[in-house]
Amino acid sequence: LPAGSRVLVIGAPGETGRGVAYGTALPFHLLNVRAGRMSTIHDDPGHFVRWLAAAGWGGGDPREIAETYAPRTLYGSYLLDTLQREIAAARGRVRFDVVEGRVVEAAFADGAYRLRTEDGSAMAATSLGLCQGHGAPAFPIPADLVDPAARARMIADPWSDRRLATIARDARVLIVGTGLTMVDQVLSLAARGHVGPISAVSRRGLVPTAHLDRRAEPVALDAADRPRSLRAL
Image (cartoon, rainbow, N blue to C red):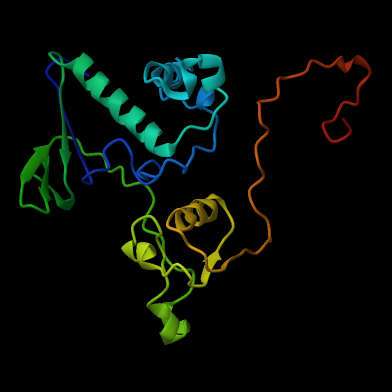
């Protein structure tokens, strides 16, 4: 950016640098990619591993840390710290402000975008980028097709619906879907001492496949006498 530019980032309170994926505070909600492949700096693949080592996580050995699956809450802290360091490095050349709030109105007039947040603050900008992520989860069927007695117990977004924490320890729980979110929610229920039956259903009846304990290193093959298609190989 040219010197003297000003950048304003407005995000939901408490979610700066984290978003939905890394907003969980539970340490057993893990990344599903090894730390060695999770650098946010594209030309510095060891950036995240060094950050973890500097924090004393995982024993401090970068080679071991690179093979681990770090907590997502820790990765959120890494993203926020990286953002803050980049802002500090640009200080004096570019003004960069982070505002925690929710924009409720945006309009273009007289060559500028005019924004208003839910607390009534007004802002203006010559360029506007909408980085909204994915929309709020929704049920795949209309609510009026569900038994009225069950509607009040249906949770579309387990990451933000506070009713999840009020489920009785001995209640029966049905989870629709058997992907990684299912794994996260079962772990959350177990951490709260849940002892009731938990059922999970999916169209394919499959659960995520576990990673190997350690990453498999590539193996060189002599292709001269090998089949020429991957399927045959």
